[in-house]
Length: 261
Image (tube, one colour):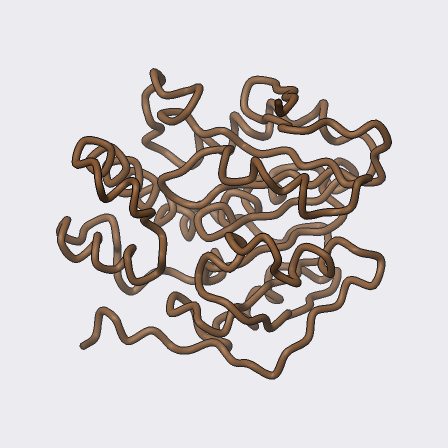
């Protein structure tokens, strides 16, 4: 049975006896902290994984989904202080990348993370040309399914699917607010993990994550799609959190033509 430790907004599914660093993870649209529930099995034994839990899902399912990203980020910043002792980092996937950057921007430099690793999203200081939250249910479902973001078990139950789509649309609306909430640089290095099969972002856009920091930027190119982290054997886990910290492939991200065809 998985042991858990939690505070108001963050949960650790498997506390470590010895902690070299904590990785605080922010989930993509439509899901909760459990997106990261198996990460403790994929990283070194001295890396402790914490995950943000947004309202409206899982053990916060009775709470209203937030309307403003600024409010959510403020709540995270207020609640994260007890996790900032020792070495800690952020990981943000897709919508989670926006959460990670905005939280880091609002933390004092001396309290902020030592590194931010993000994936599957265009840089938060670039506005979206297409607002996904405003697309029809059919178009949005088709796009999410193309990304690999809807499990067969969700599709099989129309009530679960309706709930999931409502959460996704709400989260995407928050995600689209990130551009106006982005406030300057972060006080730590940023590393972006670009998957070769992710249709949501191009290499040219990926490189612009480096504009959000003066502390150093790395672009890692890996195999996989938008949800490459769902592969428990992916090299990402063993390499991005090891002392070597190097991921190398010759693959390139494909540019998305989904909404222009």
